[in-house]
Length: 293
Image (cartoon, rainbow, N blue to C red; front, side, top):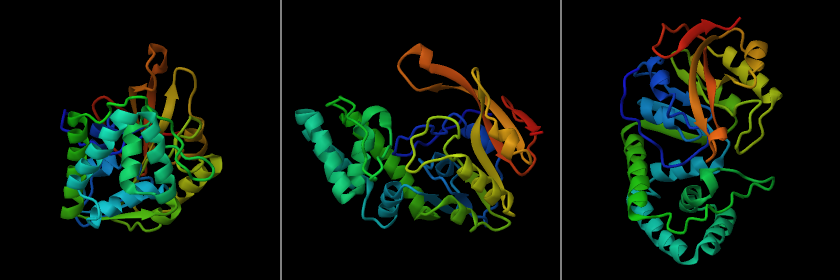
């Protein structure tokens, strides 16, 4: 896997697949006429870097979908993002957490997509989490100078790159259940799934359990399209039992890397990721390819 530029989307999301991107890209082949389908859009970092001409990005989180549809419909532009973050960032530098919680309340009332971006980039650890009443409830990161000129430019550049991809390609953003999205796939399409990792702590708009994993398995194994599923295989403490329980009909590609989930060294542990597919993959540098049996 060669080093190449990775484009980062504007939203920070736990479990983003930047480290796995070179591996994922090296094992995916999609025809120009095919549709790229992501039932769990999340940050959309994989689709953004695959950059297909046709794509369906779906998620249960309506606020991510709303942001990208607003970008697609030109209700939001990179220029508007810069102006908004400069203005709100200045108030944040003066009022700190008072303003953060003001924006959080404002977002939970009006659901402004620019407020959502502001909160994502100024909340604790860049988390996206909602309570049972669907209100964003992540606390403040306690960094009043968060929106420096350089940081705003970084975010604006990320928005602008995504904006250009939307303009130049046929991309659709839909808020709907994953099984409905998978059912849209045809034989020549490609489905990439990055669901919440079952058996591990996840921050997601909805819950994820064994029943959901079973529905996902049935949906994917029932499609005629090629698919790839990201999940976890094992760490030094335990293994993912569902790989053998539910996904034994798949090929598996393993890749080990570190997750950085905290400031302390003890929270920085290695994990073996698994990419499960319904098609064979040749050996890839840095990864192990085999069939789940």
